[in-house]
Length: 395
Ligand code: GLV
Ligand code: MN
Ligand code: MN
Ligand code: MN
Image (tube, rainbow, N blue to C red; front, side):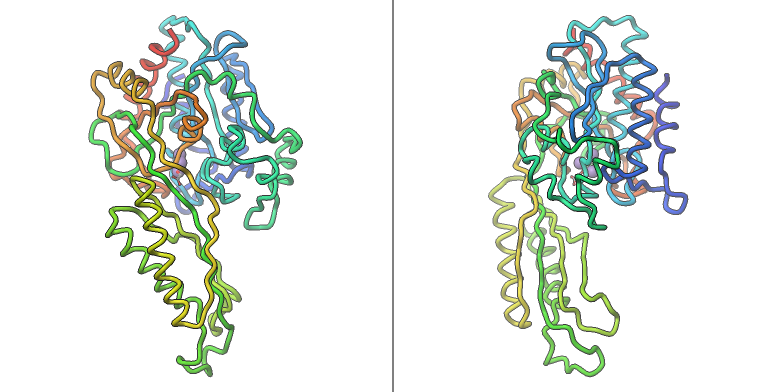
């Protein structure tokens, strides 16, 4: 089937009529619909699907055992995200396999198409949840303690999706991942050619900042009598922005929770999640230290409290140079670039699987937004590039 028609089908799933965006948290109805669409596509191609306890999938073309070349990405999204982040890699993999079959290519080793679950961590807060558990970086015990914003635990979410929580743990799927190549939309205006190859992924951390204060009346409490955690948070957000600029890094507070969340009350507590990233580990560590120091000083001034809890830390990933160069050669000298976005490819690379990434140009660099975009011609160039890479790696 052509990429265009696969893309039209997949990107219709769960698109919001209001924003044009997608909200596909792991194991949610929209994410399950996309997953079932993927399984139908695999069945139509006679691919042998293997799954693990948490719901990661690999659909195999070729021999039913032994390691192979796996490509793919994820079908979940951030809250009100774009069409491309994740699904482009899965749909391009299906189209590349169709292309290779139409050419009569016979793989020397099996080729697998992977769809890894809850990559964004938009439902349970943990990025790359499926691949982390699969690789044994996050224990089943810790994973099963996670709850979503509605208080639903991972165990219940898996149960609802027809998965068995008792099977959650290091995944047998990894044994067959001889090589992994993830195709992904580029996310930072870093690519001016249609297709590029990744060099590295920036280290990344998510930290929960809990600011405690004293709830009080908005009309009667003198400004100097307040212990307002919103004020401490606001100054922290400004400090984070400044420190990240100074360090050439990134710091974002994109999620807040306020207690009691009333217009006419000074809040008793503000919880804010910091997403911080930098080109190297030392810069990331000193960025976090600088933000924490300024937040602590401000809390003293405001008579509020501060607790900083790391929720996840993703180390720097340098993709193996030999494999990267092999892709560059196959693609006649495609540009090489790093990314500040996290990917399952990083988790698999850390787990010792030779891993590479292909990027497809994103003309505006907008991502994690309904406005995320790539030109159809560039997506088709991505499919051609992926097919060429698979042909080389699986010959
Ligand atoms: C996910 O794409 C992330 O980098 O947060
Ligand atoms: Mn993303
Ligand atoms: Mn992604
Ligand atoms: Mn990602």
